[in-house]
Length: 292
Image 1 (cartoon, helix red, strand yellow):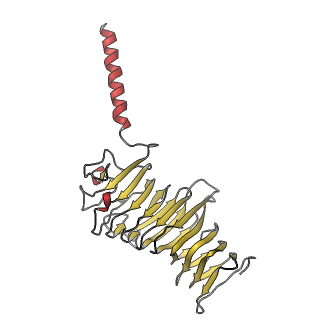
Image 2 (spheres, rainbow, N blue to C red; image 1 turned 120 degrees about the horizontal axis):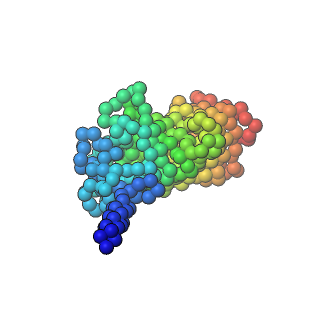
């Protein structure tokens, strides 16, 4: 009888621990966290659970900090109207997605203190969304270098009138010898601005699809990715100093390409109603066998 009671107690303890663990986010369990920055405004550490809430209407600490399965929301109920600078706390990070609601400016930094020689990666699987009414959102900077990695096909969506800017690199991730397509879409009129866009090693190609019926995408730096570029709707602008090298560009019926930079080693194809604008002071070079 005593042994039986001990077994019952052990079983109850195990069930209780399973129930507790089931409530803690972990690998394979999708969860959503809302940024509060209650605990460490001096470091703005995105890895600390005390800076997150599990509820959009609460400032209670989250049960656990973010993992690769976390959808991160800045902020709960868009209650933040001031500028904010969450940081990766100087480490490589992986999350599921990031959504921005705050009407204040949000700058995602690598670390609390700038360092021009340091860099970290931010890997996402389900994209980035800037919702209507949100303020400007910026990833990285000259002394806050963040390389954003798309680990699978995903969207970067700007539904706002504000600017979504990537100051450093947007890279392909995923399995070796595969192409990862990033769709730059959204209903807002705000610009999505890319600097360097690139493949990764081991045959991981980046491809871009532009679908911004009311907005545009600007490339300000070196576009060395080799996957295809489809301008389905909206405008793709190569800014002064911007370039595309090695990608095949197709401009759809509702799309347009404005070139103030350089296009080399690729194919350009335009439908009958597509638009091409070329700054006469700069160069358009098409070395492939496509049509212009």
